[in-house]
Length: 432
Ligand code: AMP
Ligand code: GLY
Image 1 (cartoon, helix red, strand yellow):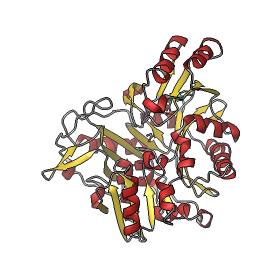
Image 2: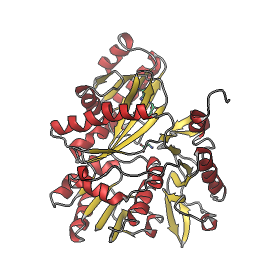
Image 3: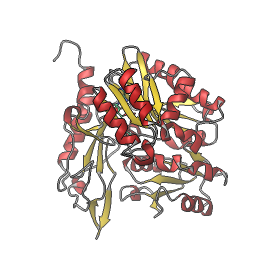
């Protein structure tokens, strides 16, 4: 099968690594890819948001499956354009991708189909939002820009003043541009966070393993939010019971609800959850694999990924057995550039990668790298995603951190506590 994978991050490197292992994969193009993906296929210099060029390429090359990694081309309608040419595509159409593209619409879908989520109100007028904050709201509350804001459009507000400032900055100050012209104000939920995934063809769905992301830049949940500084899978907070609850109360009503509304969702549903005392509740939906969650998932997936993605694209997921997973945990540590997340610096020489022996249980996925005069340099905020499988969570962590210690670039920053809270969650009670 001829495949086109769209995107250029660590997520796409992990997908390319996994897809290239499939005996069904005859040819893999990655648009635009990165120096890491080039080892598993052919990079094509077409940007992930250059939709007409991507479609033209897919048609010319007779691509048989297009896998769309990032949210921007999904929300922009790449799957719709490809379907006009009968090219099977893993990734939802624009209307269904609004689950991520519009938090306001996502909340409406969740409420309509009784999927547990935080109580919320949506506003477009500053005066209405402020009068709600003055009278009806409880604190802390969470103010969110409705549109795509690369994970930065969420402000947790401890009091009325902070919330008034946040809505003003979005609705009046245009802090997030068009993404913030509608705001969602929602109840603050308490509990551990989890990332849950299922792939679906719109009718059948196959749950994937769970993960724990680490969103803040610094250890212990400190510093600004980022795209994700590391992940561990499985998420030890998700018991078998919680997993069953997520399938029954989150994924099932969402997939079926969207199907009944005519927004059939094909692709991966990524639920950001809070595991509250009242059960799992959805914080947000993404319509793509998480980054760096994808890296740990691909390392643990034992089954061939390609038949699953193809089945989602061709409405045949019910014909496949559930995928098989390595029971051993995986840990991913992101190495970020100096200045990340505000203003990452580029062009720093990366050293040490050649000394590492990679294997099925240790991979260094490229996120923001480039080749300059034949040398590997940093080229984005998140530079590398060092991912290891271990006998237990502690071993996975140790192996990932040992590999990090071998890699150097100017200003390299990374968290030292990836997976640590997961480790604590699995310790028998009584241990400190
Ligand atoms: P989101 O992009 O909606 O997932 O929000 C980003 C982060 O903000 C989440 O990972 C949570 O840590 C936090 N957050 C978002 N919504 C809430 C909420 N309703 N209650 C508590 N924390 C939240
Ligand atoms: N790691 C979070 C995300 O991909 O949205």
